[in-house]
Length: 262
Ligand code: T3D
Image (cartoon, rainbow, N blue to C red; front, side, top):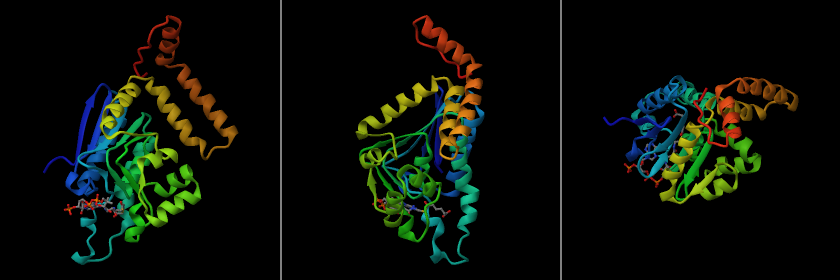
């Protein structure tokens, strides 16, 4: 069997490629676990300073492999609450909690949980030919993989409800116009741009970038007072980092900083 997630570390960037192209990279159990192993490596390996997630073939990810959910095979209805808790939710939490930037290059259709895994990443670039589909309503499910949370926060109720209730595809350009993603790019430009971005983030002040991610994510639920306290605490940590000392020294010496991620 080919590996369901290809993983390679270069220039501080751990690239994870969802790799079941004949099923539009939909998730089976093996792929969930391989994806988790990649995200855990990103968390645990200090040599990883940014992550780039993409898909192989013409799609990014079509969510859950519905072949594994075929009711015609008989047996009791699956406990999808359990499968979310066992397979999807740990991976979503790993992406959100990772104190390193996660770039997602959506190379083609992103449907169901595939769309929402993309939206959980920190910076999302998409090929202009890509589509985002909240496919759940087509099969009687509800948005998962954090989609009900992220869509409502990013888009507000009117657009979030319309996307989730109709399962209408939206283009990458519309997703960018609506603030769901950072940029829609010409198909040929997607991977070079995503790699350049990920490499530049990996060469950045990793500790400060991780704290920045933590702050922005906390802002949606914090009061201003709580957020000011949190900024104070994070800046205190960042201010003691070697990368801060290097950043200021490089500025004063009129040269490019060489951050080591510490
Ligand atoms: O179950 C749990 O644990 C709960 C969690 C659920 C999370 C979820 O993600 S639920 C939502 C599951 N996903 C979907 O409902 C999307 C299903 N796929 C589609 O609607 C379409 O494939 C797309 C709109 C994504 C793309 O359409 P198109 O026309 O570009 O491609 P296609 O021809 O439909 O698909 C190409 C192949 O991929 C095809 O196989 P074939 O006929 O060439 O052998 C198709 O069956 C396969 N494929 C696409 N999506 C899935 C899939 N196979 C299994 N599972 C899929 N999700």
